[in-house]
Length: 262
Image (cartoon, rainbow, N blue to C red; front, side, top):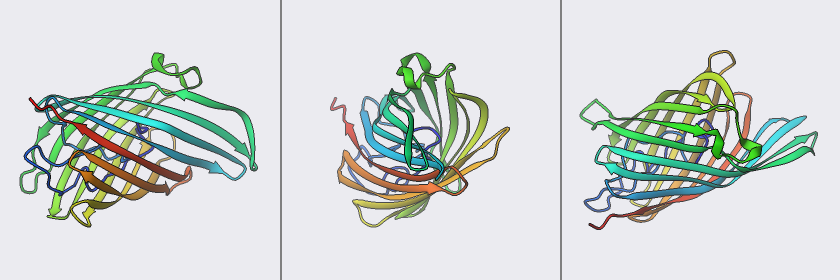
């Protein structure tokens, strides 16, 4: 799964997609964005959202490069207003000083994410669609290179507004405690999406966090989605930091919905 603070993004055909499918509804995904959608996976359906990304951060004198080869989020609709969520990454991390690699390369799985999303309200006039979601990050499930001492957690409220039949905005507000850093941080996202066609969407997003004792972090990203069919979507993302920190984000992936035919 995407890191909770790495990517706070929206996909047009995800959170604000207008593309029509059938009476089941449009495919709505939570990747590769950090702006989580308030939409719930239909009861009895399983949604697989997977892909990879590359990030680079730091100064020329010292950089951290991280490649996530497989970031996967499983979303299962348990009830009409409740979905269960399970996520994990397989990644490598390298460190460079003045262009030369230093130290050992880290690799393995990140802590398992276990969570849920609950629908609160449907959109009604000026009132947005609302959901609340949260996750636990379980240290015992991680590879030794990425095993933190503490359990991480996050929660956020997710909001969605339709602007026109082709556009919308979505935003998240919440807080997190990273497993490797006990400092509480308040998180936000704000994203705009636009339908170029019934299949292709574009989006742009601002996201970041406000740690209690250190400086704030702000980032942006943008990209597009392609809806191959009613249950399969591809995505591409490019992003970077506004404040010091993340220099580059590249992401690509797909989402697939498995329907309950009962």
